[in-house]
Image 1: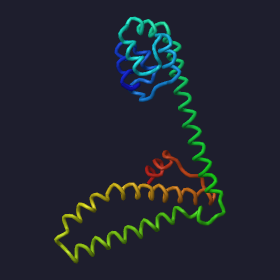
Image 2 (image 1 turned 180 degrees about the vertical axis):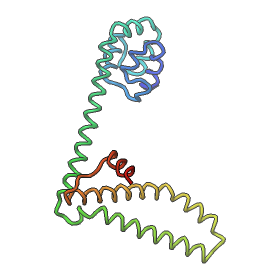
Image 3 (image 1 turned 60 degrees about the vertical axis):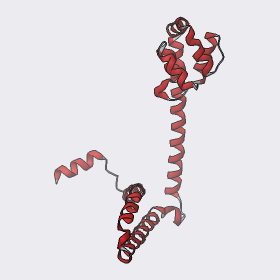
Image 4 (image 1 turned 180 degrees about the horizontal axis):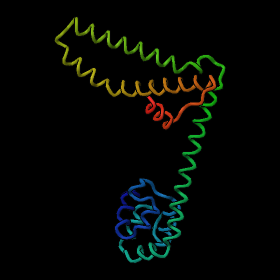
Length: 194
């Protein structure tokens, strides 16, 4: 038995305890809440210990009601720590993007156009190879269609990245020229005005 299974069982008896532990929806277990609950129950701090506590559902219900506030606080602390981690990760990504934009290195500034040229070259080579294969051996047309279909997700992702790169590159050029990039509402106003 793992923590998730044990928490799912606890949720049937003590929902606040299960929520503080991470619950099935959260997918993770809050270590502080697990130590607190297993300590109050006097069982081993393990999934098996927690599951064993289900033999006395009245005690779990008591903890659920008596310690609801503390359990909620532990859950919120875990969420705050997760949010802080995400914020730090996004801050690092933004630092990287700012460093790229400020770089005087030609390659760093030109990676987006380079990616576009490489995509065009790959598309041309693939299309040429498929066309050549069909012209030289038409009996392979079915397999070729399956191969092209199998490549569709790869091309979808690559073309989405290319689209974002083109949009960002255009936006960067407008900002460098002194224009403020328009937002969603500006685009709607422009569309309405004709």
